[in-house]
Length: 310
Image (cartoon, rainbow, N blue to C red; front, side, top):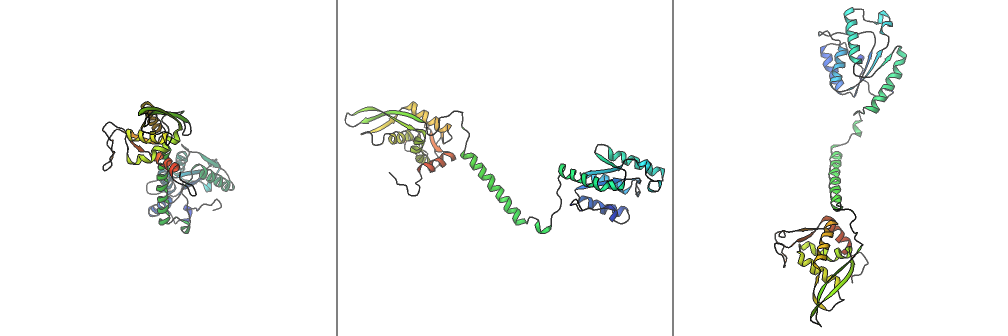
């Protein structure tokens, strides 16, 4: 009790018999550890010729309980009156001692006053090495409602972890250019004064590029649509003309890099049912946002309180 344990001492039960053994087995089922102290006697014997103590020990071992065994170190020096006087029982006790000491650590004792310290130390080691279920008061046990709530929270946590992992996909390669690094894009546009196509060139960042095209990707545009949106946004009011286009090789680089950053998906298949693109064709790449891309789009294009729209 001093070691915060609830003992179920076999000495507290009535005289051993077969019916009592069945009851003791149920007691052992509720225990976490089995403490065995062997002195000079084998104990009461059942009809099988095996003592009830040894049967209890075998049952505890079979149940997987951790056994703490304290065995008298000098059994030959135990007074005759406290030892088995029947030669057959003395032999069975010797075999029982051998069984207990085989394959497990045991501690020996010689004087009864040694036992309290050995029991406390052995229990402490067992608690640390083999933690068990133990007992709690009924009013501190988790209720069914609380357990259900904990289980729901566990499920929500797993879903949030999965969503977070989707928002932070691993890049396809190391050393990718970051969102704030610059790139120069160029193409041609139709000048309405000279009635000819003229070159244009704009230095921008990957963040700006994604900010321009991302709101349109929820409509599953194809390559042609995305290129026109990007070229028009890059030129803005700096030119007087129409039909701007983007150098195709540079546009392909834009597509590959946004995919590598985990922001967009480009599939060569028809858009979902009910969604159409005016320039869609079977060979055009269909653009859409990844979860990480959708999150970044919100951060870039959503208007914060107090901000003005230009």
